[in-house]
Length: 157
Image (cartoon, rainbow, N blue to C red; front, side, top):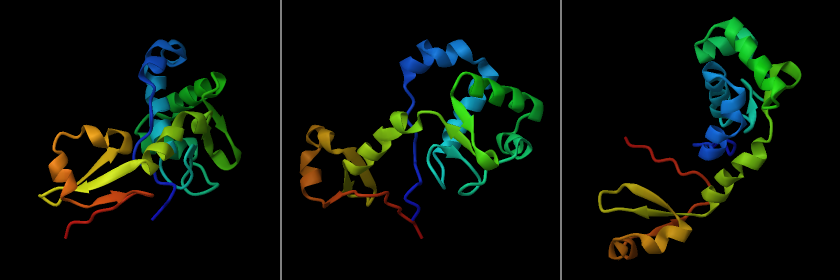
C-alpha cells in the first residue's frame, strides 16, 4: 500500500472563485492548474507532479497526459510560475507552491474517521465528530466500528 496515495484534494471554493486564481488565470490556465493539483495528489510524492520520485515529465509528455497542445501548456506553465503557483525543480519535477498548508486537511480527516459495516456489507466512512449525528444509531451499535489509521481497500471478487 502506498502511504503517499491521496484519494482527494482540498479546494477552497470561495478563495479560488473570489481570490487570485480567477483574477490571474484564464480558463485554459485554470484547467492546467487544476490538472496539476490532481496530479500532485498522486504517488509518488504529494505536492509534486512527477512520473516517479525525482523524475518529472517533459512538457511534451505532460501535454500528452493532459491531452493538450504543447505550446499552450508551455504558456500556462510559464504563467503559473509567474504568479507563484508552481516551481519547476530539477529533472522537470513540478512543485505546487504551498501544497502542505492547503492539503493538511487530508491527513487530519484520514486519521479521524470511523468505519461502519452496513447490513448490505458496504463500508461507510464518517468523520468521528459526526458519529453522534447519524440517524440510524441502532444500526451502528449492532455493527463493528473500526478506527482508520490508513486507507482501506476493499476488493470484490
